[in-house]
Image (cartoon, rainbow, N blue to C red):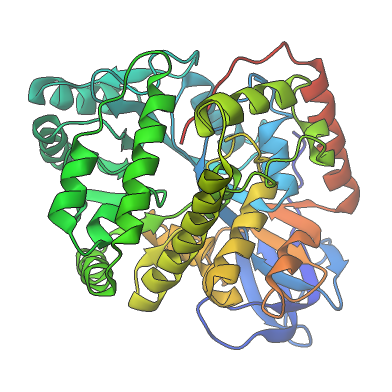
Length: 476
């Protein structure tokens, strides 16, 4: 990757303040050495000689976007593919939720300037109970099974020794190994994030040391009017072989539906207050739930399939029909799923209203989702659920920076922060869909203009077309 050490000046832009201040029109954003050197009125900022100047009159600048739940596992081990799709879509940081060696190599090469890609925070192997939900589905990403407290403690050390940034826990961890893992992670100064455990009431898990919870399907027992009964139903889930994940999913759906039918606003408010008090974040991944709950969401004629491997439609169909739909859905089940999706959106709105820290994430590459593109869909779902465009933007910029302990260096457009930026053709605060209207991206100080963005997308399509046939990979 060829770098240009000259200063970069983005002139006559409107800077969006994701911290809630007024938008600032006719500004110059001056970048030097990968850092924002100055932000100020275009008439006052002195542009150094030799700087690369881009007159962006009429355009808007936001911080680079962060997708806080991705799985860059497509079977295409090519930097032209997922890394390029993220950058082309303005996603300059990702939280990888299932670690493997290639992701660390991409991070090394991105940090050294050898390749263009997002900054990344990388999990270790998922840590699940035994049997693990993914153990009978082909994947090249590692799984750690922890059925005892000692195995859970070892999982923390294995994760840390492997160079991961955090521990990802999964759905089937039993009580003793779950709490042993949290205790050991605290000793090792390792953050724990991931799924709720089916086998421990969610209210107990909040405040026990897990810093973020993913997806909305584990939320409902704790928001019902009969919490003890619904949590007991959750604990009775017992996945059977022949696709453990598919059988687990079917059983979880049944508990979800019964819990939602017993929903209690008082229970939900109490739970959300506890999340706020314990500073626990929630990553709802509504766009993932859309592809599971709404049959029309996964489109096998989507033009963006050109960026995926040729047999992706077949793989998506298999996962949809055999795992998500369990072999088929009746009209009654379809109606229930639509109702559940509306409840998910309402829960996210209630969490936002309560002050829960929300993180924008997608769960790409869940079937139906496209890396990079999916984050814009998630922002639209957040706004459709009741968040303001500003709150949705914060969930993909400032809140991830705060969660990752990077607020001083990223998350907003300000002097001294890293130069990860997105230039938009229209105001995202007027309409959140304007985040799709990308004119240019600045990644670690490198300006990626319209022509280079187009080449990134073309190269991603070429990389997908050239790849060997992918296996069924990825996870929630």
